[in-house]
Image: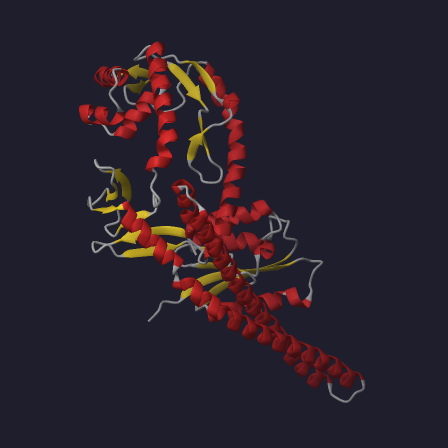
Length: 465
């Protein structure tokens, strides 16, 4: 038996906006239908009659407190839409960040795409999370000035790298490690490459590359050379050289500055050479190909000019031209598009007819409500009869409005699927027309999440939508 998911719900109206179509009753009724249709049990509701710009709303604060106290019991946070949660972007982003930390998923009645289950929701909520991080980065700027002052004083702001250790907040040379650093620098200048140094020292190539790039070994403090990308949240080279601060450190250097500069020059020359020749050796499925063992495939050139993808886990290999062709053939003949295009028209027409039917029914209910008032004012029905019938009509109107909201949401979700399909077609069209493997790889990453290959060389493509 499938376990019922549990949720809390939050509904809000403004003091100056109590329209029937956005009333608390309409939102709550929509929430009941939404929860029922999705197999969710709402264990507690919170409401506010207050402006969404106020961060100190009683219901809003109580909902967050309840979340923290019952985080292991709650799967979802349900609301009508983003504007009902908050009109203040920072307040909404704060809540969204808290939900992520607690492992609670956001469900919006009026926009089911904007939740952490659907593809579009994941995209939008990721962007929102990025915005939240942007605020944090802005606050971090206040700390930066103090750090720059310490850097200029020669103080080390990070942990001690390989070759040093911290004693009483000061970097001190570790002799045996320092000898290895000197050896790597000297051998690199003799012409040995990173791979050769890896074999000679037993250290991994990423560490060796990092050591050769680190000016700390020449006794220099460098601050701001790398920064966090506010979109991808990955370290990147800081393009703004004006924000890079360099000063002499208060520790003993392991190599002299002349040696470091010679190494830096050689590394830059090698980098330029790799960029010029990248197009000749780039791999179409780079970063996308995985074996079913869970490990990634990497491009590998054979001695006779044959290129392979080799699994870094189980060491299985496959020729690039074989797997590239197989993946492209499967994409260009993808059944996903055929089925989507076939069903879209029928579903759209059916939903449109249902919406028209619901809107007409609401009009008839409004007319009944007017007639009821006439009957009561002409003393043709009693007060009790009037109240009972009025409540019946009101409940029917609320129920109809809630059904309309959900149907329109489903219609919007289908529209998003159509947009994804269009993007898929455009991307494939561009893929056919490009001759650059690098450009083709970028297009494929728009479409594909990952590609898995089993021992029988069967291909399983996981799309981004």
